[in-house]
Length: 491
Ligand code: BES
Ligand code: ZN
Ligand code: ZN
Image (cartoon, rainbow, N blue to C red; front, side, top):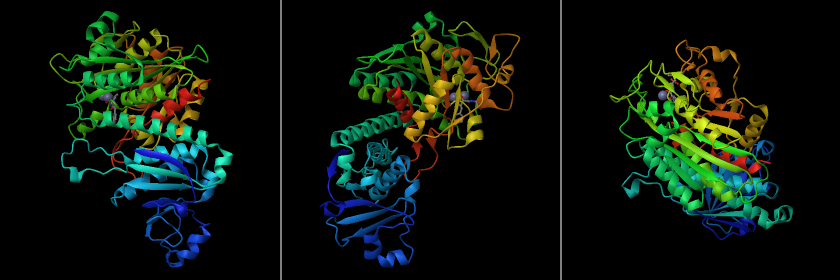
């Protein structure tokens, strides 16, 4: 997508379509006068995501003007603009339009708003149709967007600042779309080794150092928890490691981003019901978010060291599969009684978290489609956040505010540890019937130990069952924005 920042009056642009925001309660006087009928009939109210496409509007050089309802002005923030830009792009794509201009009023032409428009537009244009062969059926994405800044703003925020904001938006959204490209791949085409190959290609292209640990290496190191999950599948596992080193580090801190990479989760011997099982191809969405985040981090160059780690496995009930009752020894040395082979995410993450610590990570974030229980608790709106460290938690919540990705802090009281007690090993991999997301997080905490750590359960948020006005159905590309902001804000 071609993106350009221009300084002009929206009405003077000689383009195919110009998008102009309209406010609820306080409409633009020029429109209210010009389009009195549409306003008096209530067709235009300025409500959020209300779109009215007009041809040959008096006073405008553009062939068409899209009046885009933005809601109440005082409630309109960068997150609302991101959604509006995505929805406008999708609305216009539906009309066969390929180029547009998006006008920002002076008071919202800030760097944060420019970043948000660009992100919204690029995210909105993405479709999950890469395997459709009929070109007619495929979405024709918008190919060019002009972001129109009207005069005063340039004095408030100098042009180079806004240009940098545009590039930041592009880098973050393109990285999120990379993670969606990976997450949407079907499980026959995206095995653990292929996932590793996707990460390798990205790393080579962006100058990250890259390594994959294969099964033999993992055996040497003693990653019994991860290998136990992998052993039921004919597809070998991979532990993906991507490293970013800043030219000048601001501190000795070293961020570790760990993403669950189960390329398909049948449940293993504790097999899942067949209804809806196809959805378990997105059990690697956390891993995909980490791979995408590493791309954006490589390009935006924060001043903190960041290592991305993705344990990639397929959870299958093959003849070599692990059984309920098996006891495995994890990389940490702790023994784990596997009572349910469908609680596999925490097993592979246990070893990946321990490995991240061995690599020197001082602060850890893990992202995982970990539990159905978090979907029961929070639905599809917020991701669940668990932490052993208030300061890192606060940093994570701030990073997520800026990205518009909703997070909800969940409890991690010591009482949850009791559920994981067993007489046969150090810990068991499932708790009781209730509070399953907390028990899963408690299991991970055992392996994070004293290292500041945040766990983000994205089982309810990483996949959209239905399209939204601003986003296609399928992988949502979250919480990539938060991961990237966390690194960028790190002091
Ligand atoms: N991948 C699933 C969790 C999941 C559920 C992701 C729904 C996305 C949507 C995970 O591996 C799993 O199966 N968890 C079990 C744990 C249980 C056996 C303790 C679950 O949540 O049912
Ligand atoms: Zn599972
Ligand atoms: Zn799973």
